[in-house]
Length: 162
Image 1: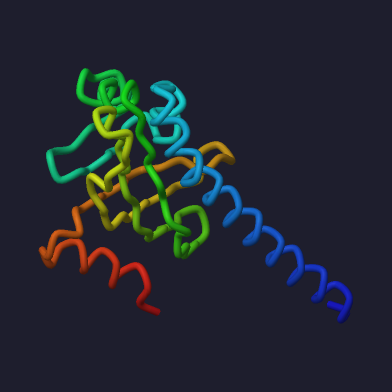
Image 2: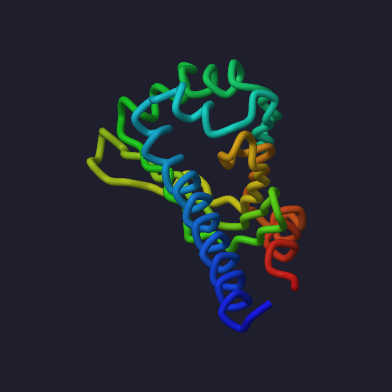
């Protein structure tokens, strides 16, 4: 193989990695706007058909349960009053057709009575992805409240270990 061929192969691999990182960041960054606008199908479509959203209150499995969460009365009340699911920049590790992203998120809610906003919760997040038919999809998202319990800190620590 010539030096030029070796260079082209290396550059193609680097470009693929960058494109994969960008695709994963697009999915993660789209979650907040989708869930805050009530776009239940868009939210569910981020996951594989059998994907899991594991939150402190329980696990949602598959598109039907994830859509139902967005359409639920509690979630709709957040939207109607004003809500912002804010997700920090993710730390992403890619291994072929799987990836893991680790980040913080917070839910900010509008208080109509006072016209102010409050942070309702801050969580540690682990997003697990698989490339399915050429597209990245969430297979599991685990979110744990940063309320002093070790489990949330462990999610963050595991995501940044080399």
